[in-house]
Structures are given as structure tokens and as C-alpha cells.
Image (cartoon, rainbow, N blue to C red; front, side):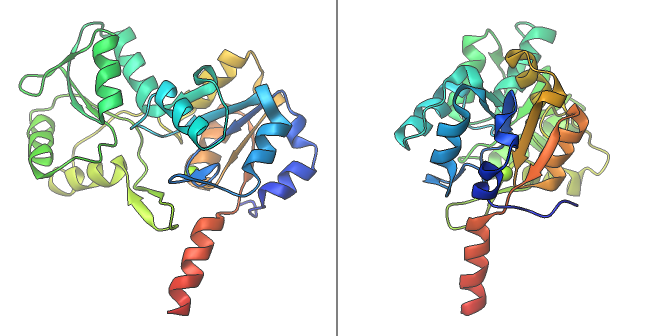
Length: 253
Ligand SMILES: [Mg+2]
């Protein structure tokens, strides 16, 4: 496994000059609403060669672009590739007008309507499971029922957590799916999210850049490193300053 490096070390070398810089979001560029050290310099250095490739499933590229602008980071939606949005667009391509049980945040549900998918929690043809901060026990009960009836499930990403602004873990869709699997161990779900190659491949295709001309930076070897390897892109593992600081604070208690 590669040793993690800080963003300043990455920026001091030649890799930021690659034709496309594919960057993870949480724990790499931001933690919650906090911009991580070195990130403004990354945006200045890489400019229109910088892409976000993230397992985020509660934003669309549009809503994330606006949220980042509010943090002083300018990146157009066209260069943001997110697991939740891309999964919905894939469902639309394969099953136009499908009835989908959406376990998802408001921006994702609005996008589903916009692209012609029909939200149906009673008799869906497919289930989409994304990160919904309002997900509750009744949602879990409904999800269990669909899975038990063998309705195909698309999982936006398999991540059990992402780092919060305090460096501590926040539950992700993989944790909800693990709850399903605890009760229904034979349950299966498909996913385009990292560590699959799909999101990186979408970014490379949009950029018109070959894998060997790009570099992928991220803080999670299993997902970011896995996706980079699957897509044939060199990978740089970044340190997690937020988590390191939180662990130091816990250790000091
Ligand atoms: Mg990350």
C-alpha cells in the first residue's frame, strides 16, 4: 500500500501537470463544510484539468458546484462526477421511465423526476439507495420489504462512512446496506460507485484524456485506489488531516 502524502507534497511534484487530475471529495478536498489545507492551491494549480470523482450521493453536480462556490472553490458542474447522479442517469438510459423506490436526499429525488423516472415506493421495478440524512426506521422497513421481494437494488456506493468536519465518521449508504445484509444475507446490490472503475472512466471520457495521462488523488486506498487501479490511472494516497487531528484529540482525553 502506498504511503500517504500531504497535498503540498503532491503539489510540489510533477503529477499536478497531468492532463486530468481526478480528485475524491470528502476527506480529500473538504470535510463537511471545511476546506482542507492545500486545496485552494490545488484549484489554482490544476484549474480546468481538475475533476471531482466522488461517491457522494446526496448532491447533484449542480448542487455540489454551488455548495463548493460558497466555500470559495470554483468548479463547474460539468467537471463533477458523482455516484448518486451517475447511477440515476444510468438507470434512465437502461430503463427510461422506470418506477423507482428512491431512498435519497431531495436533490437526487428532484433529479430523478427531471429525467423522467417515476418515484414509486409501493410497487417499484428498481430500488435506488443513496445517502439520505432523513433516512429512518420506516425507510429501513420499506427497504427490507423490497429486498425480500427481490426487487433489483442499485447502491450508489458501498462506503460504510465518510469523514465529518470533526474527523469522525458519518454513516454512508454502505452502512445501511450492511443493515439489510445482516437480516437478508443473500441480498445483492449493483453499484457504479468507487471502487468500480465507472466514475473515473466517465470523467476520463468527458475530459477526452487517456488513463495514463491522468492521476487520481484520494484519501481511501480501498475505494479511491481501487477505482484508480480499475480505470488504469496512477493513484496518490493523501493524508487525512481531519481524522488525524480528531484521533489526537481523543487520545489526549
Ligand atoms: Mg474520501
